[in-house]
Image (cartoon, helix red, strand yellow):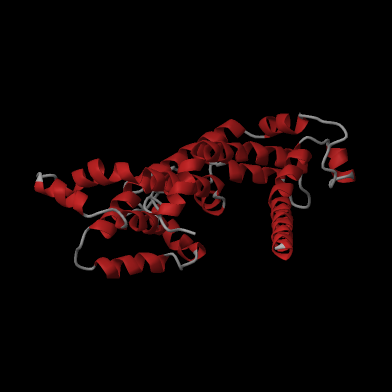
Length: 291
């Protein structure tokens, strides 16, 4: 009996040690970022690993707004992130419902193609996607043949259209809708409801946890996106916050204070969103079978 209690105590101690180490590796970099953003330039270079600043200062935060149109960058990021969430929730939910609840010819083959597209690195499709967007007819100064202008480059559509219905969104929602009873749809069909009405009125309200989870993941991905916005949004007025932060990294040096301050400001929307949607996020992850 004593040996069993001793074993449980040792296991509990090991568990707390492991949790503490994991917490330190994940939380400590964020704490260091906050600390660096509150230090002066001299203190950052002289004692960059000090967690507690010797002299607190908000000059780095002021420099962020003085150096660049940071509020405009935040606005662009917010529009693109929210737009990506809306399109992925609607189109991803619609496709997920079709794959999870309906039976049609080519269902399994087309779904496997979607899954296969998730295996292709994004860098491979960047150039073809850029050429398609630039050659979009009758947009951005282009003629009907897609020549003469920039097409959809330097517009929000250059970000929203390629990711309007991501393969992950379709896969995620399909897993959720597949677990819902088909009798709900059959009852609605007997009452004369069409497929879209069944999706919109019957199944979509039941998918709130999954939609919340997908929304958070999509918002985080869109908000933190760097490479693609840097390629297709060349105009300074169209830059996102992640691209704008690169202004503090020069050829041979980095202005760490404002960079860390801007990073903290850019992180706040994600933290706020996760705090308010945490319960539905965890529930959606569990119900959709994503571990």
